[in-house]
Image 1 (cartoon, rainbow, N blue to C red):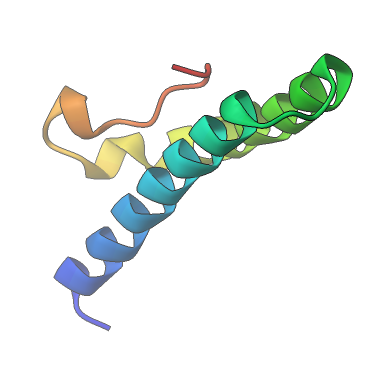
Image 2: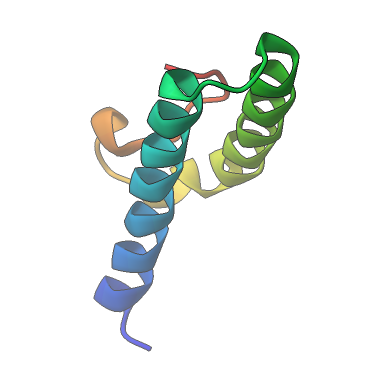
Length: 67
């Protein structure tokens, strides 16, 4: 896999997490379930933070909190 392909996959993971967050926030599930799902997403972002050293621009960095 090329380095460009690697970065593309990482960015796709981030973008898909953002979509999942929006779907959770707009869903009709209980607040308790929303909080639980958002905590999982926050943990995933936390794991991805380790990859920030690979990104040149801060705008491309992963963040540990839900935006």
